[in-house]
Structure formats: C-alpha cells, structure tokens
Length: 180
Image (cartoon, rainbow, N blue to C red; front, side):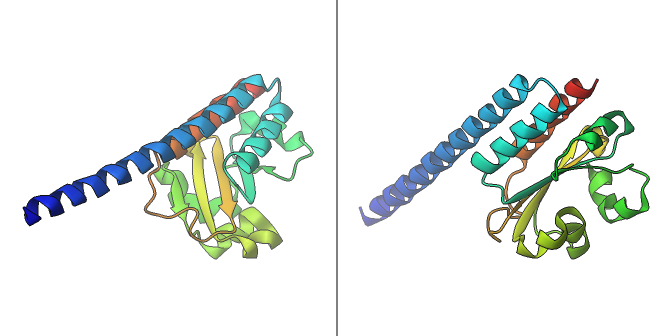
C-alpha cells in the first residue's frame, strides 16, 4: 500500500510538472503569435524594427537586443536611425568572433564570450547576464538577432531552442519581405 501511495504521489508530481510546462509553452506561443502579428502589420523595414522593439521588450523581457545584418541585400537596414540595427558585411574581419555560430546556424543561449558581448552591446555589455543568439536565414546567411537579459538565469544553455528557431524564421521572413 505504501509503495502504491509513493508511486501515486510521484505520478501526481510529474503530472503537475507537465501541466506547468504546458502552461509555459502556451505563454511562449502567445508571445510568438503577438510577435508574428506585429511583424505582419509592419509596412517597411522601420516598421519591422519597431515591431521587434515592442515585442522583444514587452513580450520577451529583453533588456537589450541587436539585429546584426550581414547580407548585402538588406543593407537598407543600415539607413534606419535605430541603435538596435547594425549592418556589417559577413566577410568583415570583426565578425570572426561569431564564426562558429555562423557555421552551426543554430540558436545559442546562455553566456557568450566577452568579445561577442562587447561587440554586440558595447558599453552596456557589462550589464548583460545572459544572451540568446538567433540565426537569421539559412546558416545565419542574413545575420543574427541577439537578445540579452540582465538576469544570468534568464537564458540558459540547457533551454530548448525550438521557439528560438521559430523566432529566427519569422524575423528572417519579415526583414526579407520588407526589403525585397
């Protein structure tokens, strides 16, 4: 009887954990949906950047973020008066610090190298606790989206990257469509 009670308690605990994970995933899906709707309403590149600013700040709790465009086809992004957007040719020597990220083409979360953090966030880099790097385009051909938080526990290397992949795909489509 005691063994069955222990098993029942363990199963009940596991069920509650799964319910909480489901609720967290629903919340992330809702935020992702809001981001998508904002990007769909954007009429031009400036609208895309404004939509990203609003969504990343309000929905995803980003302390800082940078869209680093490396594809020459989106060089118009560099004309925007926005501190969140940088256009740097992929062949630029300064991007060598992101070489393994570009090669993998997969999102990363957690701590990034000091040189990467300082390059992306400049003087405010010392306030960054954790970061996600999201590739834009196949093998990050369009560039990357970096999202930072003051909280060192916000973005952990162990977190799932499924939603980060989706954010990358959505942002890639929005940027490409508004600059084509």
